[in-house]
Amino acid sequence: MENRNDNEFRELSPKEIRDLQLGMRYFFINHPHENLKGVLWDLYSGWVYNSADYVTSEQITNMLLFYEALLEFMGYVHNYCQYLDRTVLKE
Image (cartoon, rainbow, N blue to C red; front, side, top):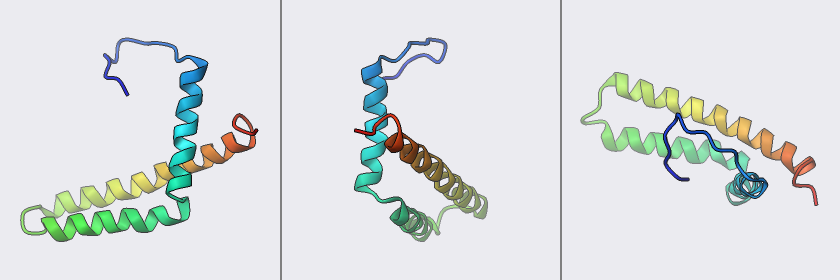
């Protein structure tokens, strides 16, 4: 995505919106939602293991909270993609 100033607002074209929708859809085709929790846990636990010597317990806690928030976000996006499949992207 292009970097832009937060004060700038530009409407997305219908093609750009569809490309975003398809991009989200293809993410879950390539990475099934039921596998994401395990993959994200592997990333988190690998980070903890590899950084345990130099991070603080607060940093580990913050990363765990981020992991949980990311899981919740992925659930929201997955639900939205299912909605899109039933409506907008239904072919």
